[in-house]
Amino acid sequence: ALEQQEVSTLRKRLGILVLFAGIAVSFLFAASCNGSEEKLAAVEGVDRGLYSITADELEDIIIVLASERLEGRRSGTEESALAQLIIGFKLGEAFFNTQGVEIFPQNFEFEEVVRKPYGFSIDELLTRFDELGFDVATHGTNIVATLEGNEKKDEYIVIGAHYDHLGVQSGETHLGADDNASGTAAVIEIAEAFGILAYQGVRPQQSIAFVLFDAEEWGLWGSQYFVENPPFPFENIKAMVNLDMIGRNDPERLNIIGSPNIDDFPKRSPQLWEATRRADLTIDLDLRLPGEEGRKRQVFFRSDHASFFLASPEDNRTPVVFFSGGLHEDYHTPRDTADKINFEKVERVARFAFLVAWQLADGDETPVYIN
Image (tube, rainbow, N blue to C red):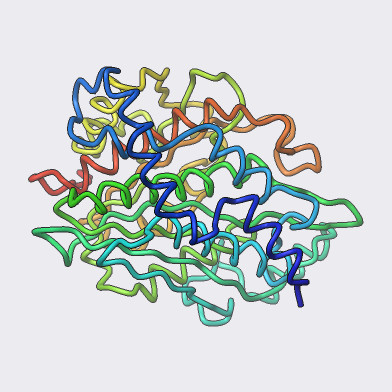
């Protein structure tokens, strides 16, 4: 059990105290106006939400999630449970006093997942991980928050990231700052942006589901369980936006992956591509389709968006888009620490993803994937 003083300290670090939440929201509204003169060439009317996403808040969340106390957030551990508590508090803060919000955990056992990763049985997977020296638990917990839309309440855009990492393996702690405390922090901040707008009465047409997935590192177990056991009909998911490893490498570059072949994303998902193009009129990133490199590494199938794509019929795929800064030399090593994160880059990518998601949720045209 956690000491009360320890929990209190973490709450203070994250700015979770409900007593000050109303004051904080007021300051956010005022501060966001200071940036309203920056260009919003393509997506207007959401500036207060957009500029609530800040590098300082992202840094606070990433530092805590990638701290020694959380020991790398390995699924099925006390440290993972503490990470869940922190994420739940932050989502609660994001939607403080906002109507039409639900926040809940989604517990699962690996054996409950129908489509096993890589086609292996659980015993086969555990044997392979054991050979690599990895300690793996066979259960996890997704964290879900839903925000009700306006006209199309039964339709959803999913914004997700995995919060788990490798944890302590062979005596070494893998903290997972970029992989994927960075993406987790971004989803929390994006949720806050939507929450601020909803508090003001500004909501997109469609509902939003913010999902933090567990057990991604062992084979996308959390996202696969979610698509097999969604809290709303799976066919009501109109698109999925995934953020994974967004805080390293070139500060300007962002990889965009939305189809298995990667290079053909613009013609396979024209609505998603247009949303990214319009969002970049504001954020101005160096958007890349990492074709040859991405195909070689099969990156399309290596993060949680793939579960949504593969769970849909071959002739009616769920459109997905995966934002990532790409792999680096500290990937899956104990060197993936918070001091190496470019928090300004995380801010820009989170704002970019927010603008993409807003367009998808508020657009009149339903996104499609063209085979």
